Image 1 (spheres, one colour):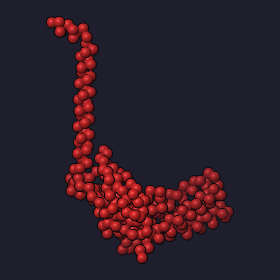
Image 2 (cartoon, rainbow, N blue to C red):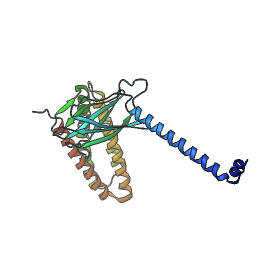
Image 3 (cartoon, rainbow, N blue to C red):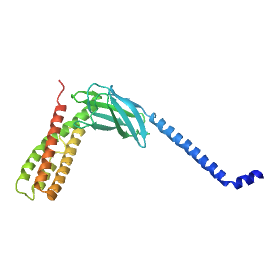
Image 4 (cartoon, rainbow, N blue to C red):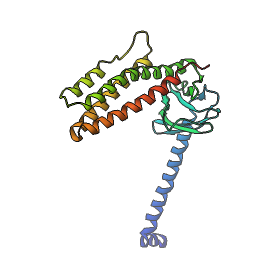
Length: 255
């Protein structure tokens, strides 16, 4: 009876006990979920077919996987590919600040391996180096090089159009100049006979990108005039020229 009166007189004791219980159970649940997440990290195989592109960390993040790889070669990596349950992600870094120097690490987000096909897991499949050499599965090496070849082929077609566009912009304004430039780019090929999917996809991607850039410059031309538009077109052309040269060099057979 005295105990009952004591509890009734201090209801906050019950409230404190209830809150404490909820906190303890919540902490237990969070710990269990964390343990579950950790367990999911090893529920599928992880491997590298590129001997010295080493997997150093793997973390499940929602419906994705954060994969960290370290370049243990003595040369810089400019592209590599990763598969997750058969879906390929190509990481093209040529000409960017994201190339992987020796002993540097790259972290990327990839799809979580499918529960219906966990045996596929995640695999680093191929790498291309700054000097043009390669390592890994030959099929996946070819995919990277075919994509580069497609991009280079389309850049070689786009460059003369941009050069003529620069000349046109210096002349008296024509209401049809932008339509002409866009039409010429739109008529560039999307594919070539006996070429791979990767080659054709790169052709199409570069054509669509060039069209978007020209449309943006057209709007700038309306807003700010021919001189500004001409300067931007020249800058785009210079970047394309540098990229074209880098791609050509990367595709040369290694002596």
